[in-house]
Image 1 (cartoon, helix red, strand yellow):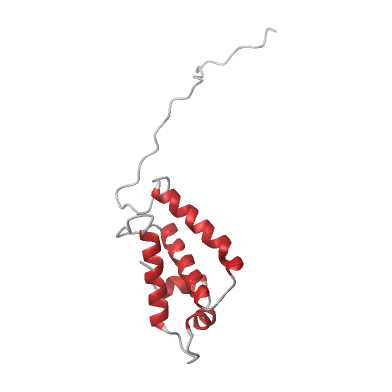
Image 2 (image 1 turned 60 degrees about the horizontal axis):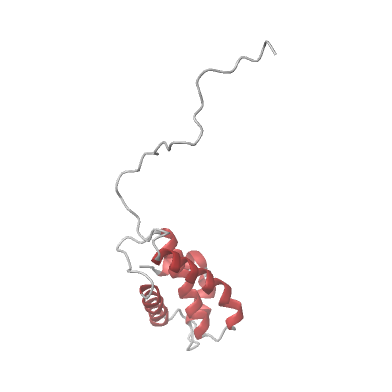
Amino acid sequence: MITNEDLLKEVSQKELLQLSDVNATGEIDQSIIDDCMQDTISFISSFITIPSNPSPLLKDIAVDLTVIELKKRNGFPKESIKEVQEKCESLLLKMAAKKIPTEVTTSGAKSPVQKKRSFVHNSQRLDLTGL
């Protein structure tokens, strides 16, 4: 669902190295990142079914939750990540309620529909010159 490139759009290479290098080898530990990504996908799956073509918002949520998971493994204080996690959870709840789309549809663009308004305006203007 997400890749390292998606993570690098959110955090720098140096920060990703610091978050994933739990053994202090000086290299990015891909197994730690993959495990955090799997934890994130499992968490998201508890709210919604993962679509084959996820929306950009769902990808952003997955990236944010993966970064949070990496920070949790490094002992970051819960208060510093609580706000972002609550925001992601509220968005996932809205996606579960079908208020926010989870999948990008590739069908043709929908044309705007003219809605009926409560006030209908006449095409003739009111003549106020004699008043």
